[in-house]
Image (cartoon, rainbow, N blue to C red; front, top):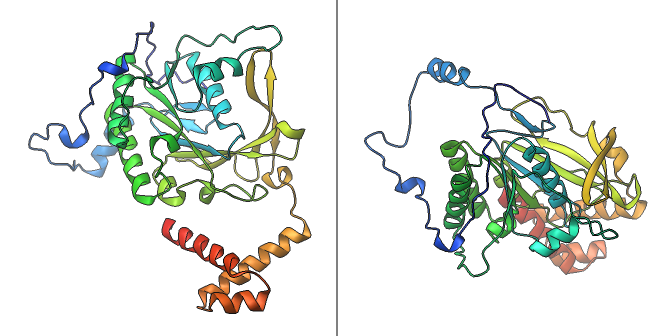
Length: 347
């Protein structure tokens, strides 16, 4: 982790007991006193710049992929290792600053077993600043995104933690792939960031995709309507190198520095368990193309056929005509048409 003496992040000793059952929702933005200022703040551009110059530049929290005071996103396919990498980040950051890890994926037993040496029974010892949070099983959980995020913000205030990792966005809203739900969610996260000075990393999944294709913003569930709101985005892909544990990390979006880990310089890693700690160990750097399996001739032909079907659909040709002429089922044509409609909806 990089050090920056100007960065002011809390170092708060002690961990309090969290009582979810007695929480009450924190006020939303619309409930805060407006006084007579309205919702906009107007200043000269020079005044904005002068005020911002008095604050320290954002600190890199992990390899320039996620910075302080940002809403970032880490995404990957199922079982690729995004939760493993997120815990790894939390441990590294937790060695200096308090981190809240909201775990909506694993039970406490699953978490314990993941970070225990199965042969010796030795459990991994995390930094005391690494606080894992899970739902109170006896508490009623409202499906409203705003209420849930209010509870997250309340826990952060109670623990005086400014760095939050949320695993994952799909739990927050099962409709996160809907543009409206994604916009509502991101609006609240950005409001939290600006109002409380939080650094927030949310984990997300990829929809069904060709794992041999390069990662990009469209690989993120919710696509551009979700990605547009993020300050930074990075993703994990499966690498053909290093056997079944081969992975690579690619930088998709960055605002606080130059792009460092794009398609020509991805971070190559290997998923391994050393003693009691499951982690991604950096093994080097390379191009994304070198980490992907090259498609065989049949894959190429299928891709070309799909493109031809998409072209004909765009020209208004009937499903039956396309299917008969290309020797495919009408269901195949219908499926491609639905994919096209979804992409258009996300653009």
